[in-house]
Length: 355
Image 1: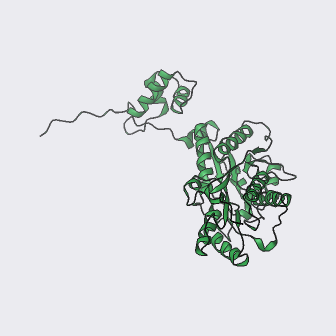
Image 2 (image 1 turned 90 degrees about the horizontal axis):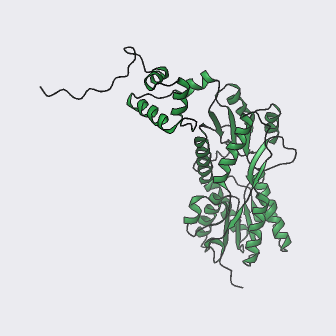
Image 3 (image 1 turned 60 degrees about the vertical axis):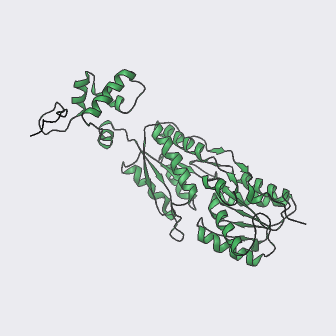
């Protein structure tokens, strides 16, 4: 027989009983509240004490049941992040803008000691998010997009529910929104394309959505200032789906064979537009300039690199979370925040067409 192995440390608890926080506190010679703070990384605990408690916890495989802790303390540490979907289009989680926004929110919540509950709901029933708060599953809600039901969001705000929305600031709004300056973004695109000598432009996007409507409004205002119009046949209503964007762009090319520029209301749609233009043997940007919206990570690495309006996605996560936490701490809903947008010019729109 071989030599017996080194004995494993055994938690000093009653036989068969899982180690409790009180046991860990007794071993460390501190109170249970000190153990709780130390394991959550609280700066209120002396670094040496915090490290000693965390070392003991690792030694005896002790972990906090965060749900049970929340129930005992009466403090819910879960925030619901909601991405609505429309039954007709079912915008995919694969959309790179959603990836960036969800990642930004996850980072901000983690840094502040909160957990994220990611969920989808029917965009026609935004008010169902109230059930997450009413049932105690979440302390508050961050909603990505207003979609078409501003009235439902106002009704939830009237109830005093802790809710913050990534979206456009609208007239008669009672809830807090954080969003980019969509009108300015659209106008910047128009000014850029006009400066490149483009005159026969088309637009891709669903103006039934508040943010897209503002981008379109800024774009058409910029074109009018430059003496250029945008007739109905030069725009298409399309959801944020790549194949829908491709089909809409093919239709626009066929209806407007002399087009020389595209403004797509998202980078995903802009990338789909580039693919459709290639199908029709149009070169980007020599024949047609293309500009998107969002500046997702892939935009700079697309072929050609995509000109776009940069939304402050990383800043947005922090601003959204901090606004919600103010409400959870008993403060009134903060004023809506309008974040800066910038035009990022890359190869897809830089070439000036031959006269």
